[in-house]
Image 1 (cartoon, helix red, strand yellow):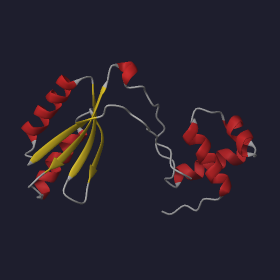
Image 2 (cartoon, one colour):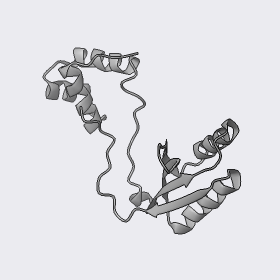
Image 3 (spheres, helix red, strand yellow):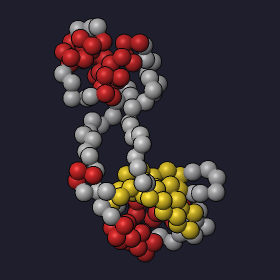
Image 4 (cartoon, one colour):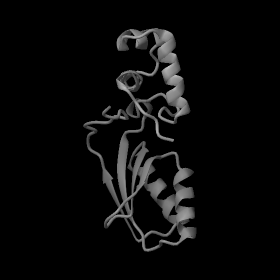
Length: 153
């Protein structure tokens, strides 16, 4: 279902991306509207699938998750059963924050957040015990320069 967005929808979405905990009154004031029309637009955007689940962003380092690895995976397996097992293994691991299937030399890239290198090794050992992979390269992020979920509306 395609949803047509106008300037007011974009303003509302920008405010929600900035801080979804704002009250309807705050959002309405910032976008130059009143509460009821803003609420109706938000409801329609949810129903149209533009707005998904609302969550809270936690600070990983404040919670002791100091290591972020980008894991590049190459596989020689491309059968449906292998893919099912691989995807299930990824879904069951809370350390995997993102997983993408790629075009090119690398088949998959994972963003894995763990407390330290030892925790990454435990993750790695568990993953390769469940699914066969051809090559795994782990890249440790030394510094997070930019991280956002906001789309450029």
